[in-house]
Length: 77
Image 1 (cartoon, rainbow, N blue to C red):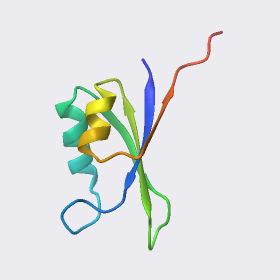
Image 2 (image 1 turned 180 degrees about the vertical axis):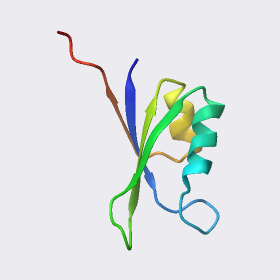
Image 3 (image 1 turned 90 degrees about the vertical axis):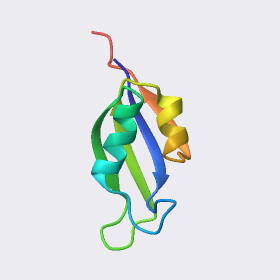
């Protein structure tokens, strides 16, 4: 099960900051599971980082206007 980091803008297309419930709904729409949502700064963030497991990563990134996707796989023993 790969995990994917997706870098997105902290602002939504409508004015306002990203919210966990909104990002979670996009992930669920594309059969992914939102693990975490982080911002790169506490007071004035520029980017948000989404960690999502499984799902249609291209669809999630597209709907969130993703700027970069990094796919990570578990290390082999």
